[in-house]
Image 1 (cartoon, helix red, strand yellow):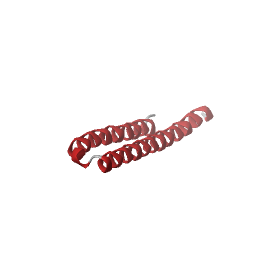
Image 2: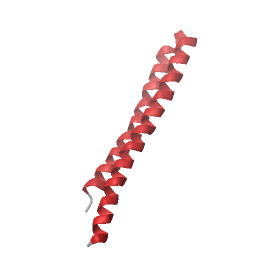
Image 3: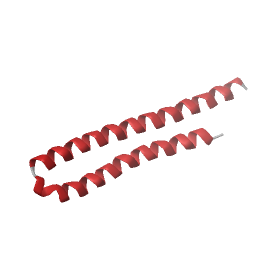
Image 4: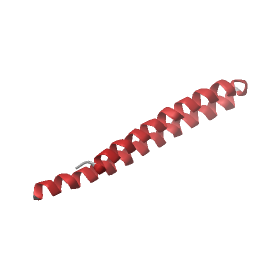
Length: 80
């Protein structure tokens, strides 16, 4: 009985780690992408349309990683 409680507690810790690390990775990725976009737009303003479309695609992919972390956390949280 005690072993089941320990495994359940570890699932909650794993869910918290999944969300935290995924959010941290997505935040770092978005920060680096924004920095690159701003530098590129400042150096060559005539390419803003091209840079903006690539930035939005990269930001969506970075956020998808964060959402996958949330999905893993929800699966661990509601798993029995």
